[in-house]
Image (cartoon, rainbow, N blue to C red):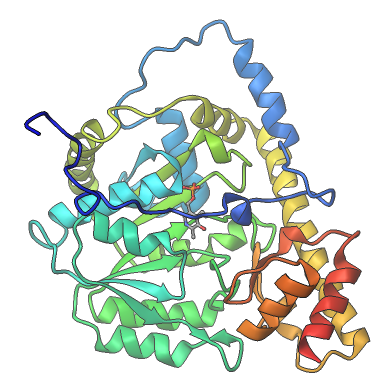
Length: 396
Ligand code: PMP
């Protein structure tokens, strides 16, 4: 057959599956429903009634007032780096797009040209897409760094620091800014300081992934502590921000890649290259989500209302954590359950082993990942007794 074919045989084009339960990553109310934030509803009606707006293309790098206000919530209003004009941003399609644009830039330009050999380290475990996004951008050496201590159900700080000490200089490290997915375990401020010290000394590059700002503690500022600390230490860095979770704007694909450069001239050159990468990827970004975020962040009243909405979500998760732990302790379930409230953000590593997970799924129809990871938002005041009793049965 001489005609133009997409493939000649199934061997040329195998069928692959991308099985992702997107609901696993989303916030749910106590009724188990998606939540449109009240502030988002309000801002959407402002936008729809604004007769000055149109559907012309946005600039390649995105809506200027979105990019600057988004970077400000990551770095803080009073960030010296912003005042020194060395912070810039690229509006991206979600946090994934921000990681992708950052990875494409680093592969091309970081530490010399076309760096396919530079090791990129991602936490073990991590959000699975980290591996694929970086290898897809051309990095040939994406590796795990030690993070989770399964025995003690906490951070493996010694292992993490050991990997920072022994990796090649100039390696790239992807760090979860807060509310680590999937373990729910973040370094403490003291631990972050140790991590930063080694990274600075060993000339390692920091790429923060900030997908859950506000979800860890309920406070945007607290959740940005690590990012701001690294900036204050003088690191040049990238920070991929997602507004999918903290604005509930999952399908609007609104993300931001914040760039903290050495100086204003360097920033200008980075942004010019970013423009070229974006131009050949999506040419220019969509506007609705970015407008919602920009209008909200640029109005003191709406900003306050948003912070309140974020706190509502974070508080519900914290309440479910506290209740689940209390119920397991009341039942006398063997093992310690402190990690349920020590962990933060949407996810929890329950510590259930694969047999126990299978029992939960087969016998109790409670669906969790084989790793024992649950999305805390699956818990509601109506099902929490059943879940606690089921965990008790699975463990005993
Ligand atoms: N990073 C992490 C750690 C995530 O969990 C997610 C979403 N599950 C993302 C990035 C990507 O977010 P977005 O949907 O905005 O692309």
